Amino acid sequence: MAKEIEFYSTVYISIGSNLGDRLVNIQKSINLIRDRVGVVKDISPIYETPPLDFEADTLFYNLCISVQTKLNPIEVLNETQKIELELGRSFKTVGNVYSSRIIDLDIIFFGDLIIDSPRLKIPHPLFCFRKFVLIPLSDIGNDVIDPVSVKSIHQIIAKCLDKSQLLIVEASIC
Image 1 (cartoon, helix red, strand yellow):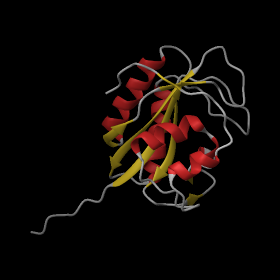
Image 2 (image 1 turned 180 degrees about the vertical axis):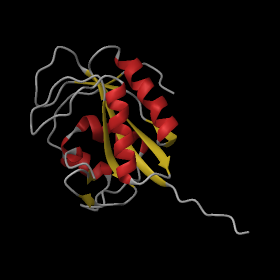
Image 3 (image 1 turned 135 degrees about the vertical axis):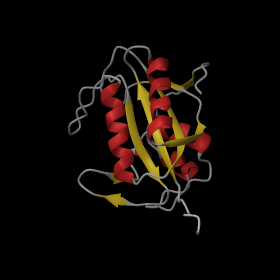
């Protein structure tokens, strides 16, 4: 009997938290991603970053991870949204109204797929405007090319107008 071939895709996920114990929130989300989505291959350093486009009392911790998954993009979206809810996020941002959050999981890239549906857009439509995504992504996805613009992450960073200051947090996530 022939062995069934399994196909894996690499998905890049941005993780952010600015409520509660940010490190614990991030670690729990990574553990749940390992359990439900796939093998976490790379984890960027954690950066402390200011909120973008809204005021908050606390700074964010942001990082990116790469995950090898057998799931399709909608299945990954479903799992990440379930994880957000389980960790205490009670709402998603509506329109352009942003607020603090216990955990935020965004799919940035899924292989070289381009998806533009009402429920899911890949690449994430705002990734190129956010240094808190671009810098951690460049740490683990140096050779990643945006399939829409066909530019490298470093080329996108060079054109990014976000002037936020990012500070590496001396903390370990595994």
